[in-house]
Length: 203
Image (cartoon, rainbow, N blue to C red; front, side, top):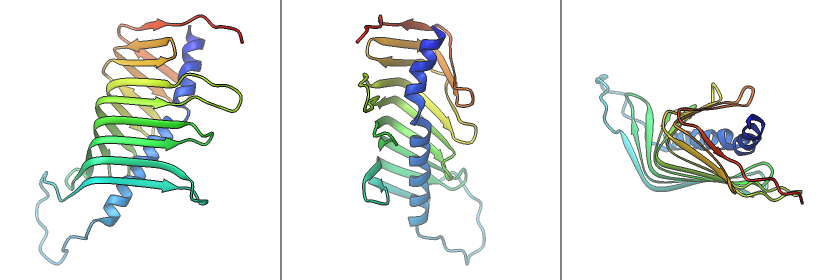
């Protein structure tokens, strides 16, 4: 049971933290860099929790050195708050291609990220689908659903205190909360944990 769960999550999480963290770090840097500088000649004013810039209906794409598509981040609206230096993005859509050609797609109603992109919180109808295809085998896509997912690239930690469901083909894992630590590849499901494993069919 533990071995099957570990193998299942290893396939799912191989590129997910890197892909999502890289996308949000890149997008935040691009947005901050493209924002007009504030007038620094006047006297300093207290920073309040108010939006200092907004971006609507935007799309950010990245390509490799040969011009091949690598990733895209789409948002309906992005708002920056200078007091907390956070960026809030609504109607988030992410599409990325991994090193082995796997496609990862993620959507959520909202994302909140720090300016340097080291911490990202996906909120509301979080849905992540990652293809699990290679030149040797073809597997069913890995699917993750929850209402919340927090990713920290500095601690290599993915966690949610809310119910989560992980599916691949007929295999299904669920729990009331989840923590994944990249160090050691440890996945912990807490609360009412359920697992459904389909019998392995020899080729």
